[in-house]
Image 1 (spheres, one colour):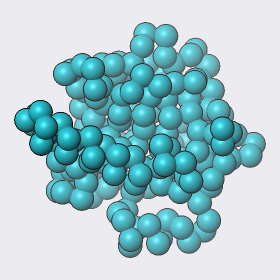
Image 2 (cartoon, rainbow, N blue to C red; image 1 turned 180 degrees about the horizontal axis):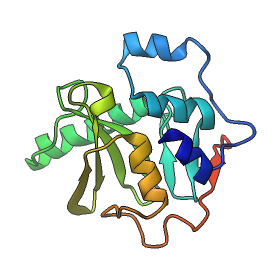
Image 3 (cartoon, rainbow, N blue to C red; image 1 turned 90 degrees about the horizontal axis):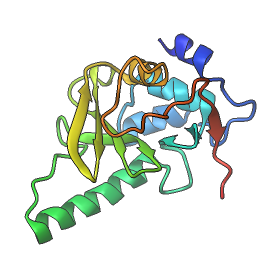
Image 4 (cartoon, one colour; image 1 turned 90 degrees about the vertical axis):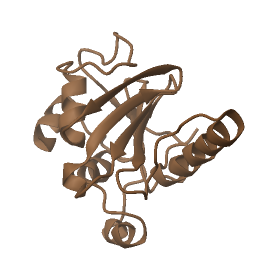
Amino acid sequence: MFRELTKILQAPDVPVEQPASNDWAMLDVDFCEFPLDFKQFISVYGTGQIDNFLWILNPFSKNKYLNNISQLDLIREGFHIAEKDFGEEVPSLFPASGGLLPFAITDNGDTVFFKTEGLSSKWSILVTSPRDPEKDVFHFGFSAWLLQTLTKTIKNCCFPSDFPLEKPIFIPYSGS
């Protein structure tokens, strides 16, 4: 599936914030073991966005808004406020069993999560928007979700109809 994805979405010549050879092994021990296809994506593409809309979070990014772990902390803070101050029911976040772990965000404020239940190779995908109660759940992995999103084989509830472009483009993060 990852190979098919690379045929549709050209990898950058110079990826930004690629992990070093032992970074994933350290993260597997210190945080969690991400799905293999997600690791492949980050290792090949680095930090960046697709079609000026969908940002794939990178656990090695120095930008806290583009880093999975930092994003998780920001979401946790927001959920705490929503629950404590407004009495809202919020979903469980990682590291709870089945808890949500962000792996992508959009320029519209949508978040795409891994639902961390069982082995990482079996994690499903949840797409949600803070402005819309509708959510999409996909029972397949990262590469399948991204490939089907980019080929418009599936529709994500909160993504605009003009995303993705006919020929999707990955844009490396410029640091600004």
